[in-house]
Length: 242
Image (cartoon, rainbow, N blue to C red; front, side, top):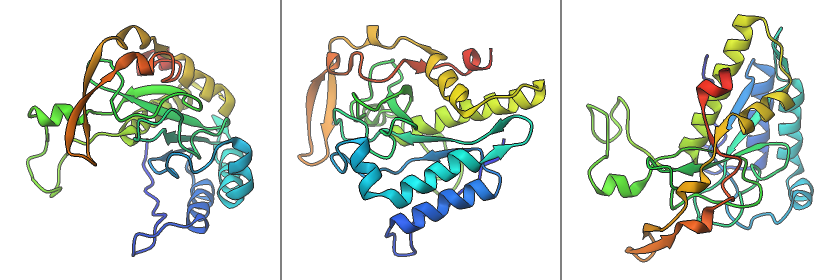
């Protein structure tokens, strides 16, 4: 498994549809088979698939190009786009991930409860570990020997981390298929991702602390808010390979 980092922002950190579209086209033309996107347009940017298709057709067409033209010879013709659902505790996945042809990933905490920042509801497909800032408050902050992102591994949280887990599982599946001489279709891989899961809903009971960055205050959130709204379940890499 190899990783291809693609920059979609300008040196001044601005991001435009033109650059995003170029990134997807570059990935398809240069051997990438899976796209892991930790960016999104934010809650309420688009209200429907039709709105996304109409108002950001450049990115939509580029992702379509990737999902059609990416290929791993002998294993899969076509690519799979995987997105972070968003970190606003909003009752829907953010676009583009919410689009029905993509995979949108929500986040769970180490105790299998919904991460309190994760988006949930329509457009969400599957759950994966995303980290939890409440655990950093209580002392789990870094696994790195260096501080200030100087190197090594750093503790982070967000649906971006969850999307990376799911993309890693999908990459393992493609690698295993290549080794075994199996062929897959993108639709079948998307189905495998969403069905190689365990039920997370029994854990969504009671309440837990949540921190509001705007007010700087702690409050509680009822976990049943997330029940049956996080996707099909939390992904299991071993189950996916089997």
